[in-house]
Image (cartoon, rainbow, N blue to C red; front, side):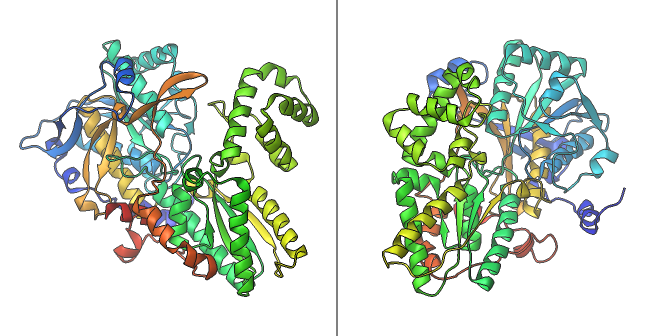
Length: 551
């Protein structure tokens, strides 16, 4: 097999560990610190998780004496979408296991949670692990979106783990995957099974975070990758001086990616979904705001610019949110009937009859292509797949129409030409930044400490991330303390609460204090490609968001 020069060099990279994880692994232990509770729905969650709710927060510490652990088998599964650094989670887990006891085995379940249900396993040895250190992707064992949520599935998981003599299962995933892991941990406890379940926080969206999970892995690399591309486009726009670039950025619900990329590149316009929802801005108002910037820049001689748009924007616009909610309910309640409508014309006629008057009006005013995208197949939760809705094209069409009106009224004399982009998959499997390489390796290494301590229902936590790696701290957070109750498919279910952009927090206030200047001036920043070699302030720094939050 041949490797690129960068691959060869990245294989040699030795991820840094926090001081608490660097010593003799047989002297690394845990310190339970009081009981925990969820922020909301305490009664419901304590009843759903009677055996794991209220578990203590865990601090990873150095012990005075060490005990050589017995050999154990640990299963690992990659769940959900890819995020840079997943291979280093597995590498850290593997190295910790082997240092503790060389006879321990790491078993990777293939293609996500379905690998557990189908008992498809690959034993991960040093030869395999070494081919994936510090590289992007989840291809070492593959990932999948199968959900572990039924009693029958839990029984299969238990049977497979017993068959493979697995004493701990490490689930690398996002909020849904770690929620399912917590439910599985509770079920094992109920069955008096001693199989531990430990989670690792993964999602490039950045919405799996709280006081104890400062950032999910992959966010740093993905935003730096997107910011490089945005910076390249800014340079092109400032050179050609004839295009407005509308760039949609991945991020299913929260706008963390869009906000971080704005801080890194200083575009003319960056829409933040949470602010739009907070101010109850309509689609028309959003368009008017954008048009005002475009007209003012044109008057200054700049008929070009950069617009950043979060993927989930459309669900935060009041009238669109209501429309989507009604559509989700209609298509769920009348799935069989809707399936009999074979043409878009028949579908749209039926939809308009069933929608409320306001939503029917909104639907009928949307461009045909957006209407079609709203009626596509739903996601696993029964909701519209917002990533397939071309919000950037919708905004371009509406902005262009409004500018044509202003031109006919003599209020706009410029020219408007546009380009649309969607940056999503480009960032999910990039070579992890040094930050993500170190962070993920530490998460995996620490996950072994939690698992070998026979904890269950916990998520691996590495904190103090705005500081140098040696100052990072490690521990474990009970997943139940991160939960709330939400309606899914008509039923209230426990879920990890998504962290949205906080409009009072420093990352947003920093952005808000400067965006008016960026709107009219071409104040573009050009981050360039991720650097892996060179000064620490270039290669090892975390995201701007994390730095501002750390202050």
